[in-house]
Length: 111
Length: 114
Image (cartoon, rainbow over all chains, first blue to last red; front, side):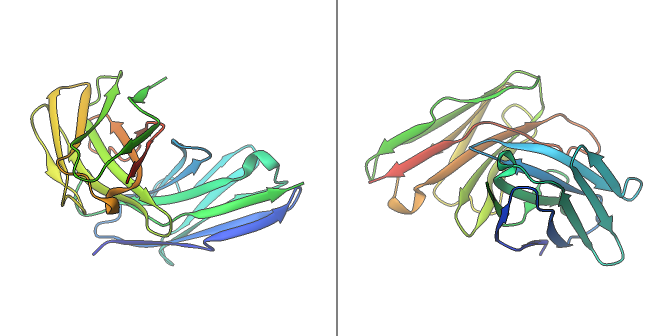
């Protein structure tokens, strides 16, 4: 059974801190790992990491895939209150259509 | 921008009622999905569809059915709502491709069954 595990499940930091969110995966025929941000309702896409693209960066957010360790991290530098959200990690499993999601990390950034 | 629209943001229903959750996407995507999201359990796939009139069970299909009569619309049906179906329901779509992992989500429907 495919599995995606995120840690920590929740995190509280102060504005300006740097945070690292973790995601480990056990999926059949790994193709990619995705990160989403969910602020209110709709998760929005952040990054997709593959064997040919193991590092992605966008502004203060960056993500790295470690295929040897079967894991990924999402880094957020100089956090802002607007970064408060649930961050979801997911990977497609053996079936082409299904994403297996982790339970998410709830990040709270306080002023 | 891709738009996935769910018909209701909040719904309150009684136990035993038949409930329809509607989802429409405007980008001609072949694949559509229904997830439910519960605290501590994350997102779990209920059903998905890769073409009109085609459907496949996800991880937790019990108590649900779906309908896809038109490409842009995917409906989730609770035949007889129960309190354990109180949840956030998220619809998503993606284009057909060899790698179709990037899902576009709707804003969700918070369903309460009393």
